[in-house]
Image (cartoon, rainbow over all chains, first blue to last red; front, side, top):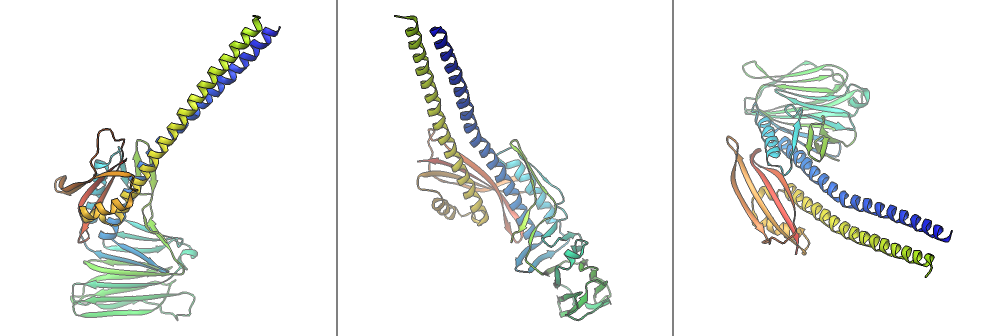
Length: 273
Length: 140
């Protein structure tokens, strides 16, 4: 009877030992595996940051440089017909996928016509050929957050004349007032307009050159949606004045970085406040 | 000698062997953990250095003296490192235009950690070079 009891105890102990050994072995394997996985994620994050930062720099140098100072957001662009931006975005993608230390795939959806999204104001700024659109999303919350626009044009042509075809001016104290400043510097002087327009009305300013051709059209649609159409190369500095500070990012999940370790989908942060 | 005594000795022996086994695994596991995390920390440091050098524009400067001084300042003195910079231009494909290698000489026995970053350089608001920085680090 005593022998059976001892044998049973030994058996129990052996089972316990085996269980402990197996647990330790599994734990050890996990510990070894975790840094390897983290190292792989590090590599993927590095590639993502490379792509995001590279695109941000191409955007700032070749399309629009965005800076935020308090409530003022400044967009500076040299608007040309050159497709240099698209070429460089394509080459950069080709370069990072070809020269990466890992098997990398990058999808840059929507980069050709970049759109910048302002948070938390729900406003999108879209750049397409011959057109820039500052569009508060269609709700009262976003449009009310834009207090005004200041547009400064520089062109290498004779200074055109300003011609307002639609204009509804209001007092600065009007709750629907939208501050507008438009200035243009041409080869023979400057022209400008400063005033307060009704943000809920349709306003249109055409700039007509000496040969009676319209070269720039600034339109303000309800509500506080500003569009610039142009058909010449020029420098443009646009300043949006908001009622609070903002952050800017590309509006689409345009970066899809895929490596053998996993995928990371995200936006290009243009300016973080 | 009774049968029970023999069994007790047997059981004691089994416990001693099992205990040795457990302590050996625990010891090896502890060592493995330390080594792996040390490598991960080094990897993170290398990545941080590469990101900083890119975002401060030092890689774009193509100045080996400046880059050398910055990396020496950024890494702890217990680290040795080696950096290979390559600058490519694009004309019917990417062609190597310039490059240099700076840092310490490495021996075959050194256990190294490495990382890699691609970057771009601009001139007159246009991309002029597409570059790669390959950084290798090991403990002195």
